[in-house]
Amino acid sequence: MGNRETSGIGKTLSRKSTFMKNKTLWLMLAPTIAYFILFCYLPMAGIWLAFTRFDFRLGFFKSPFVGMKNFEFLFKSGIMFRLLRNTVLYNLAFLIGGNLAQMICAVFLSDLKNKRFVKVSQNIIFLPYFISWVLVGLFSYALFNIDNGVINSVFRSLGLNTYNFYLKPNSWPPIITFFQIWKGLGYGSVIYLSVITGIEQDIYESARIDGATKWQQVRFITLPMIKPTFILLIMFNLGSILKGQFQLFYQIVGNNGVLFNATDIIDTYVYRSLMVNFDIGMGSAAGVFQSVFGCILVLSVNAIVKRINSDLALF
Image 1: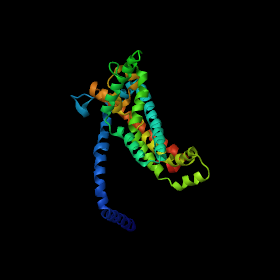
Image 2: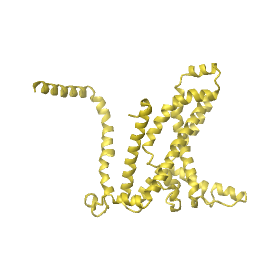
Image 3: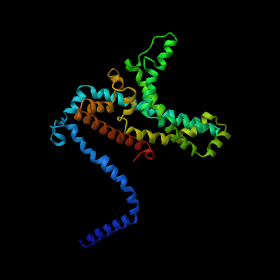
Image 4: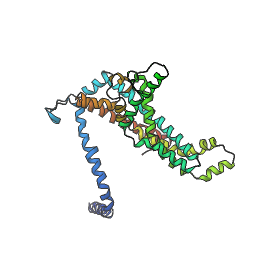
């Protein structure tokens, strides 16, 4: 017993001394810990709302408990399947199309010899990243509205019939995907370009001496080198595959019910539930499902990647 007590006291003193030695680091870490506690962990209590029929008069604790009825309604009504389909397909298009476009852009920029032209090109490509989604929504309306939009104005000048984009749901998936990829192209390409820049030039020199063409250098040197970064970015973004770009959809499409079948995602549905229909319980249920599904997806994909190549796994 004495040895155990001595050992326990020794561990406690060791922890205290370690804490005192690194107190500056702990002090620097304190704001981050406070942020996660206040904005990530405490709000988890709101999960309770997903199992209630929230009544503003009764408040958080006295609103009637309805169990899984909110979730049952979402699935039995078919709403959740439509939201899941749209959210997952859009995010897959953003994820795959965006990363491929960023990789291609980075490869082309890395091969240019005129450094001034590269810098100007990077600034032009990066500029959309800083543009507000409100402005992107205005650009979209200026292009596609039937009255005086650029596209319909061109159709009229050519003697063609106008096309009302805002009444055609199937027109919007490629439009929305284009705007998302266009806006994130500069930021993502900088990440890949930094990886390509870090590749030893001796490797390319050796390949050129051996007679490798430019395409062969890209295929057998550049792409394998940026593969770990590509997988890492894919895995980081998989966790938010059910978290749609709310501002993108809301600013471009808005509350146009005609387009909901092709453009409605979980985030826009939650917004309407909370701000328009005032259905707090239903919106919370959709949000809880979104979070749980995303967590399970990240853990599953990480387990698969770890089995294939443990060096590429997140944890």
